[in-house]
Amino acid sequence: MTARRLLTELPGPRSNEIAQRKSGAVADGVGTTMPVYAVRANGGTVEDVDGNVLIDLGSGIAVTTVGSSTPRVIDAVRRQVEEFTHTCFMVTPYEPYVEVAERLNQLTPGDHDKRTVLFNSGAEAVENAVKIARAHTGRQAVVVFDHAYHGRTNLTMAMTAKSMPYKHGFGPFAPEVYRAPLSYPFRDSGLDGPGAARRAIDVIEKQVGADNLAALVIEPIQGEGGFIVPARGFLAGLADWCRREGVVFVADEVQSGFARTGKMFASEHDGVVPDLIVSAKGIAGGLPLSAVTGRTEMMNAVHAGGLGGTYGGNPLACAAALAVIDTILEDDLIDRAVQVEHLIKGRLEKLRARDDRIGDVRGRGAMVAAELVLAGTTEPDPGLAKQIATYAHQQGVIVLTCGTYGNVLRFLPPLVISDAELHEAFDVLDEAFAGVAR
Ligand code: PLZ
Image (spheres, rainbow, N blue to C red):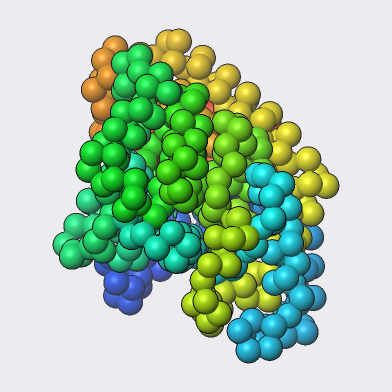
């Protein structure tokens, strides 16, 4: 028994037909990694319009952590949709929004007093974290890091590092955004976490000045930038400096949060307590929801009416989020993320032992990556990443790439995927590496 079912070539004829219509109807600026049109998705698989079933190692970019049609979430959303879909929390509010805020205040790192505000997308929440930090500090500058990804809106484009495809041709960008060097152990030749933190702080002090700095915004484990796990002590060093200098330390946990890395939030791995924490993606099982949670004195620095939006904290998304939180806790999905890490790293390390084009295997929980290089060097090999991903796609395995150099294969399956499904997918990857000539 295999988890995959391949009835046609991928993409199949029905998918190709719809892809044709997409070209005639949808703006070309929206790309598709794998133009296989979905009709159904579950724990670890996605079924397409041609009846093919694919193994999902992407979770719709780290969103369907609890699965894509998980019963608790379906029931909660169904119950809510029958009551009402929208009143606007800023007009006539409703309890589920308040309950999501209570749960987030409790689940996020630190036992200090907190407040939460809800939005729709990751980028929108990152923008609002910056607004809050500016209101609290009365300062303007924002520091972000090399390889960072924070979104596609004007401010978050400025905060995102990579030009193509995210920024190219879309300037001018928001001012007062400065970039500091990250800790990137695979490419830092021996620089340890505290050393990398000092290097970044030195750049910030010289080029920005702490007195001008409202917020330092960082992904505790970078997502689009290449699943880069900073050396131990890097995040803590930055957080300590921020505290001393009155700078708001913002963790962008849009991709790394919500059980994905084997903790509820990735900041916990480094014992870091962010002032503000941004959640999205995995929070609501596929419904659009995001949040900023943080210290009450910072969150409440904004005047009434200064934060909000028509749909922020929509009741369907809140109902889904409450069911997602229960599912994560009751089904021990945080432990499951650790099991997934061991399985995936085990498979990748075996592969690396016989293939020196895998330069680095890294990540935490169900957020693991392999960085591909020209054999035996640290020279990025984006062509190989593309070939491997294409092979996997043709064989019915959804794999994503990432990284500034486009040379990183990233694995972020739903946490409810089975071991058998994972092994089957990694058998395909073994074949892919064996098949692509050096
Ligand atoms: N911060 C850390 O990972 C979204 C975007 C992919 P939105 N990452 C996937 C793409 O090509 O658009 C992301 C993230 C981190 C912020 C965001 C932005 O979240 O919900 O896409 O706005």
